[in-house]
Length: 577
Image 1 (cartoon, rainbow, N blue to C red):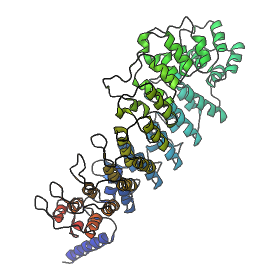
Image 2: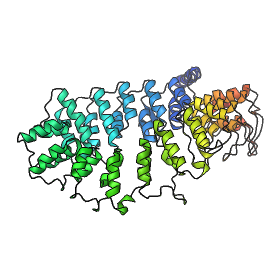
Image 3: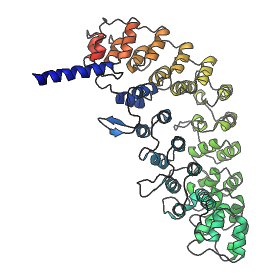
Image 4: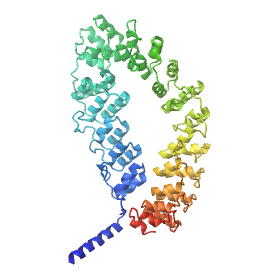
């Protein structure tokens, strides 16, 4: 009997504690649930709600994924980058196990910078044997396929900026690691590491000749050759490639006069290396009658391709004049995209002269929009004007509009982009989804963009703003004529009913203030109150009742709002109904 009374007392005490707590005791509505929901839906409001009610920002336990760090989940799911930065701002641990390693390994410079700004240890020793620290991992990366060398250069510079320690083993990793890509691809990174090594008082363990060539010291290289220094057999190929990349014709002449055959090449033909690094002087010297442009290299091994990568007009023009017709036609859409990134109209014009039809009448999935999307803001107008003047844009929906600035939007419309076209609809959708450039969203709406239009098969701006919790974006759409009485395409529901399912009270209040019909019933007879109750949103149910929601209405199956709480045992919510 005594034991029974103790059990009853404990149960009552537990209920009192729960009722006094701010944490919902609904089934499945733990603080962790809110945190995970916020990450999964890119909804910062729900994420913050979970944190405010006790969720651990560095630890999330889930029945399916097990124990996981929220920052790691954002990385795994490729979630909105804002969540990553937001979690760091709220105090997430930047030194969480393997987090920094993953960002370095993925060459995600933005995330790496954010982690370092919030205190990540740039010199942490990793358990990964192959990559003992961040700098070694970054140096190795420049020799792997599928990685942009310039991104790796930026990453290495960032790590050094934040105090990454350079020691000889790191340099050796850069110089001698046998990876999938040829070693000469990594020369710029090797230069950065070597300069930092010497600046810190270390010796490179390289021969004076190899060190001078790697540093791009042309005069020093020539002086050493003239004094009798000569590359040994082991370093000859490496040295020749460095001279082609950073050296001078005088060094090449001395090597040639000493009996070295420059036409054989080292890892690759030397003329290709000179073109890749944009060394016009060594390229001109190496390009003589013994260099055959007609040999059967793939396009990725040609001097023309490397000249394109580095915007070397002289080299690229020479390649066009000397290359075979078959090789000139190996260009593809990605080469055009790369050229648009440069914003170099002259180079673009030369590329189009190769005879490749980048935009055939039979659509192959690419349009000028796809190309211009990759152009940087500074290059945007020049590239756009070129496409229009050369009649490369053939259909109204191919006129791109991007959110660089109000000026770029106005320029696009001036060039011929229709205000009711697909690119504008897409931009309205993207801005409503992003929530950070509401000035541009308002500018488009002021010009006459339709707030009720949708993009593609499922790109509904107002719905995306609701799901992401972008209240200011939603308010702008409402201010410029969003129709709340309209059934949304592909949903057969009104926005208010869909918003009710998210449980965001601020959005529900906003929609009600703009005249949303609180008791509207969908084709199944469901009301916003039923949908909110079925999701266990206690605060939202309370809000709807306060604004006059009718809890006695029935759906087509005869159920009222309270019945919707029963399936998931939302007893606390049911008590309101």
